[in-house]
Amino acid sequence: MRYDRIGLIDQLEMQQILLKEELVYLIANFGEKESRYLFERAAAMRKKNYGTDVYIRGLIEITSYCKRNCLYCGIRAGNQHAERYRLTKEEILECCHIGNELGFKTFVLQGGEDPYYTDELMTDIILAIKKAYPENAITLSLGEKSYESYKMFREAGADRYLLRHETANNEHYNQLHPPQMSGQERKHCLADLKRLGFQFGTGFMVGSPFQTPELLAEDLLFIHEIQPQMVGIGPFIPHHETPFADQQAGSVPLTLFMIGLLRLILPHALLPSTTALGTAEANGRELGILAGANVIMPNLSPLDVRKKYMIYDNKIATGLEAAESLAGLKKSMNAIGYQIVETRGDFKK
Ligand code: SAM
Image (cartoon, rainbow, N blue to C red):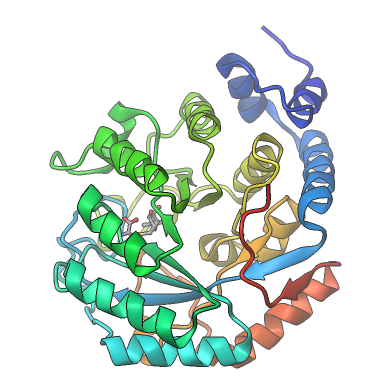
């Protein structure tokens, strides 16, 4: 069956979700013409809802220890060559201080699943950040936890939580993860986060091993079904100390096309133009914004630990202080007709 690809994009813009086979067709058969058209429509949609503002989130990578063994990830427990570090509460607060001075109104605390950070310790850290910066938003990205743990974090003041579903298809999930992990459990966590009133985010890697257009279509349908406020996607990039060391990296044009589709499917979503996109291509983050993304997450982690949070090879760690890299980012956004704004950048609906 052949479909009119431009017509399918128009349908998405009119808020009609497509059938799985239509999405598969579009994903498997888009060319430059469709990309150009999609990015134009996605840019118009994001301008209607968010103007040309780009929100910034200060990313603090709090630990490179992880008890999980995701097959794609450089900080997986099984990687004995990974350099491990943990930030103390004081170091995290210092990152927040630097970020706040620079105009960051959201802090993202991300890390491997590290039992060192007990619920009590995390709660203490969240309370301390909220006390020092009551106007700022806190986003957590610490993996799978129990409902009770998420509830403690929420009650302590955490506003948002990022947990990529990685792939909506359970068989594919099992190809990317060890047997102890399950796609169902991941989805269960997302349901808990939603129920607790977090602004929640999900997402996936584009070009992960064994991924097909059918699986990407399932991802889009799953996202449409759960209606997250945020969706983070970036190309899969191999890490040399993982079982997927020899797999191909995800394609940048396909990642950009998926960002454009997501913008039309979730017109109000907060979509980051990710570090992985910036790693895969020098101007990847700018291209992500032009394809419909509206968030950038610059790194606020201390300089000496940045190279240790190596989830994939060559992850960009410029060695620039947060202030310098922010200045560069402001310039590069202005050059493409967008501007970084210093607000919390909450979901607008
Ligand atoms: N542990 C938390 C979790 O599982 O959500 C947060 C940290 S985890 C490293 C953040 C994300 O990095 C994952 O959801 C995954 O999609 C992405 N990631 C891991 N390895 C990657 C790779 N090789 N290429 C691209 N992205 C990767």
